[in-house]
Image (cartoon, rainbow over all chains, first blue to last red; front, side):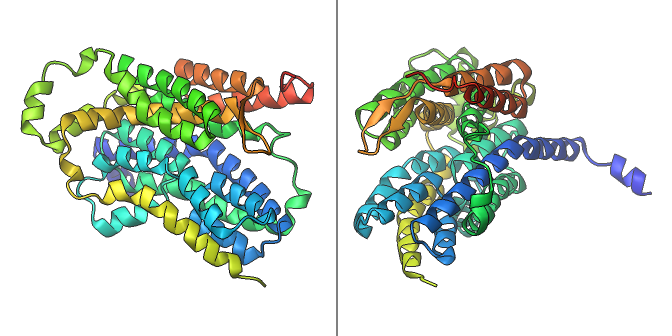
Length: 270
Length: 113
């Protein structure tokens, strides 16, 4: 009976389970990287005079590595709180882009659900979640929370580990773990490239982002690349989306558009 | 045990949360115009590519000024991109990038002078 029940699962459920397992596998290296750098953060926070509760509060309430590291340095340097808060706002402004890009996928979800999902929307959750939604072809709440848990829980737990015993652990950079984050982001960007438009947007994001970062600040470069890269993508004809597009614009219904957003088909992705 | 900085953490969280939540909570986000959806579809690859590139190509000095960083990390990320494009396997790509970086650093070839 049990075997029969298992084999009677609808094909979509079987495929969804496989895609969630794939999400977990893809998250493994990112989880390891996040944990390794949370250890370093915990150790740095302790060195800067934070208590364990204070170090953990940053990881729970801010949940953003770059701004947490910056805060440790600024606090250790005696910088006033308003300046720390302002820098945090600027460093984390890129999350606006993530939230906007994911918003159409959250169609039909309740406000409390969206509000809770927003708190765990970090770089890695965005990248893993968006790639997963596109593979599935629709929103998958458990998939989103799996991605969030595999990033955020290790980040918070390893903060305590680093605070309490970070001196005994090897330097993540010596092991090459610092390259996991940019490599994962670049790899997941490849997964989102379905045609010339996405490719143009990604390449423009690189060029604009690096140029703006060198002229101003890294955080500004990331936001500039993310905002302006898509405009360059619009300059490239997108043959795949011509044809039925006009009719769907008239319909104006996201429900009809989501299959278009979900392109490319799963086999073309990671 | 000091808890003063918990208040700072709350303030930092308070200025971070709106950027994460506002578009998600925006009324009418379900019925955006087609061109906005097309734009948002391109934000993903653009912002992730920018994030990766800035992470490995731009270094922040102690004075806060940004400078171009040239190192094995460029090759590592490009290797990951190539592996993902070829094999469609992110974990394999990341593993290749980490091994290249660790090996280069072990033999002292991590960064150009």
